[in-house]
Image 1 (cartoon, rainbow over the protein chains, first blue to last red):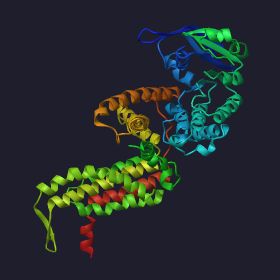
Image 2 (image 1 turned 180 degrees about the horizontal axis):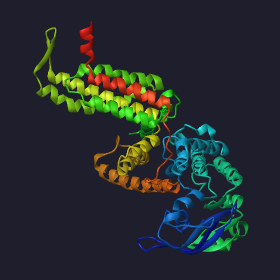
Image 3 (image 1 turned 90 degrees about the horizontal axis):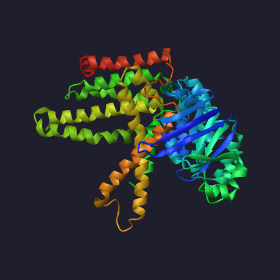
Image 4 (image 1 turned 135 degrees about the vertical axis):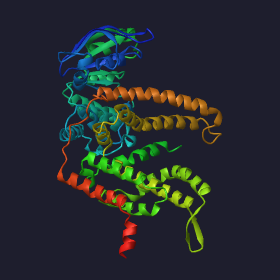
Length: 235
Length: 265
């Protein structure tokens, strides 16, 4: 479970990226984070894994408050899949990328290998073992990036624009895949149809604050709310 | 520059070989690292005129490449990349060290030529040894062992980062160059007047991208000061390998095998 209480993030130039944001995501819950460009979605996600500091307020994951001493434990529990898979795949081979997190946890090579194998098989990408990320399609890179996080056995996963760069078929495959995963999920996206299919709950952000928090179907089909939030289109 | 992406792939192709499963691959990484360091130190310790004594050391790369099933073509291509540097370093010897060392038939051979060939050969042997090490040992295991040998952490971290970011830099350069040439149909390649802004943009973009990559690394528990994996115990075959490589190398350094042969036959 992630509990965010009154989080505010200010950039060094004085820009208030997030102001007084509070919400809770329960285990197994799938939540969409929707907002216009610059609404603070990515900033919020990066704050949840302690990449952006300093902030005011508290973030706790499974009862562990995020602070310097607990940073590694929180990052083990919350896996973040970045918007651009190229940022996440930096090792020569996919299996090395998937092993990167477990190795940093100090696990023995046998366990690391088990983690790599189970992540590859869970996502159905065993054929990518030994391949270089430079030769993969965007869809394959996206799934491989998810595998790099899955191998750390997180309880919660956060995604930044997971459908970016994907063709319709890969997007469909991703929807199926995410629907199967048992983890709690927070997914920042502009793809309203995707949010509708994958996330029963949606948090709408506007200018660094939470504009609305409720059932996805009730929010994204409401033209007035979506318009006020700066997202002109509804489904 | 048009095929930067394939060049990037090329850079990491040696490391991709490290996932093979030969007997050499299965050895303890520390043993492979120490034997390579020993080999390099011993090769470098020879006098610059002792070319003939270096010849028996060819056994090291030849046997290891055969055992590890490392392709000759990849290895020779990589080793050839270092030769221009050795050529530059050694060419002055031919010009300035002109005393005759010996005569072959009627052809005098200068000390400069001997030392020039010796530098080229030593470079080849050292580079081949290091390349074989990279081809049979995953990169993370190598840096782990360097830390265990108490190499300065800042040095090891820099080594890791530079190695990883070469790909990031080339990837950015490739994307920028493609965008450039698509809008520069009148000219071939990058024009001189755009070099400055291209390089500046590349630096800024690479820095930005490196930040994002580093964030992704941190999110997966990266901490340069933490121990990356548990200590793997040495086995009998590791110790046998170390002895089998070190002893001949040390003996070849201590005894002049060519003189021994001449004395015996």
